[in-house]
Image (tube, rainbow, N blue to C red; front, side, top):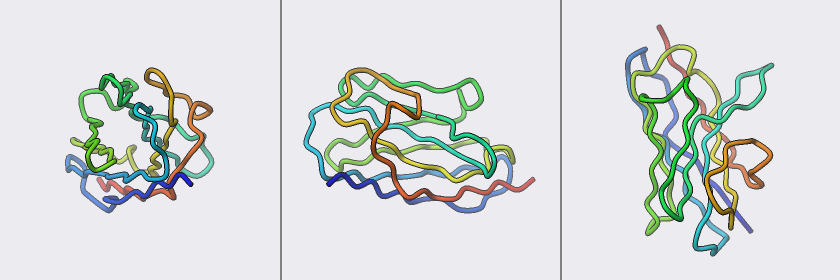
Length: 125
């Protein structure tokens, strides 16, 4: 059974940094796509970063490009999201997602079949 467990959320002032972690278990595909998404109440879930573990290729939307970095530690089955220069509009529940066996980077919600429970990020001005 696939499980994704996020950690690292919290409250920070604008301009600060946080690092989210997602530990994955329950699948043995050699390559996968892992993603980070966020959602605020009343809005659709949006992707903020994705990585294809096969070759390390990544995707970022313009809203976070240059501020967020996704990375992987295959030995630990962990994906990280380093968030720098945080803004109040980054406030959201952040979710880790997995697409086991995927080929190439993915970034739509529908591409991911497994989700973590979410971790809250709050950025104050």
